[in-house]
Length: 102
Image 1: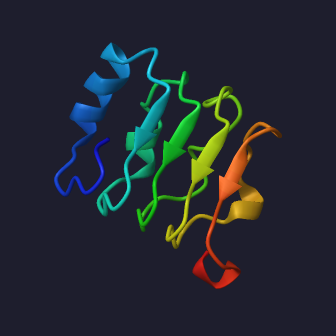
Image 2 (image 1 turned 180 degrees about the vertical axis):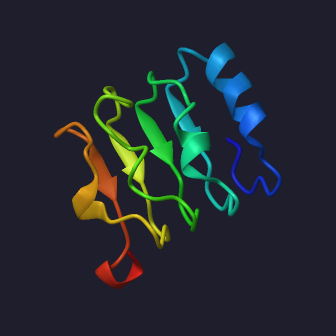
Image 3 (image 1 turned 180 degrees about the horizontal axis):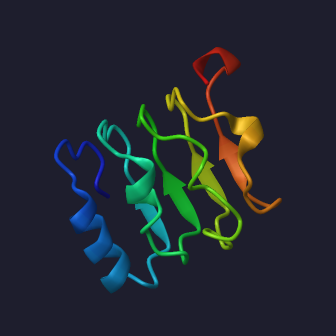
């Protein structure tokens, strides 16, 4: 759980992706400086990912190819993610806020 991490950096995420290859769940809620390139280096083994209130993320890094095992994705409060454009596996449950939030 890295929720609330204000000063997370891309090099730290690269290290996390390299050493946590079997990581199943990760919470990155309220990490306001989280960017698409940080998500792109996370391990593909994730089955549950929460990025609530990460306002700079877009739907770009969330694909079935990148996260083939993803079962749950929580994007509540992510203002730049268009839920309709997510290209995740069909079994992935996306938890989003009211439509006016995205």
